[in-house]
Length: 92
Image (cartoon, rainbow, N blue to C red; front, side, top):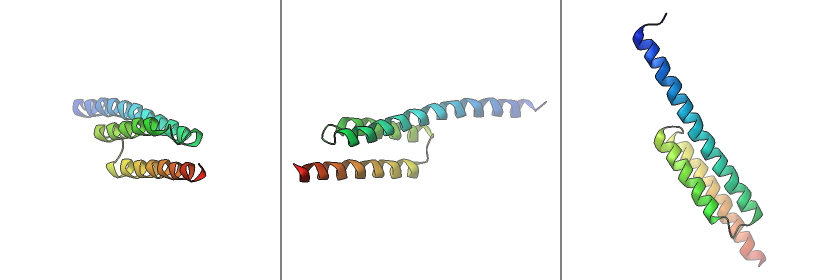
């Protein structure tokens, strides 16, 4: 049997793992939806991108992602969004 403090630490780490897993899952789903929205209609994807960035920021705030990871993902998402917008405007 582990000591009381080790047992509590294990319980707390399980709680944090579940919470982080949920936050990460939500953020990944929102990013995936934003990328699909960008591919489908670059003009109307701004709201999906905003929601994805918000969920990434929230996950970083909760400690589910490292801040640099969130910054990198946001940067790549905005790059895709801006590239798709520029291509759509050039085609129009």
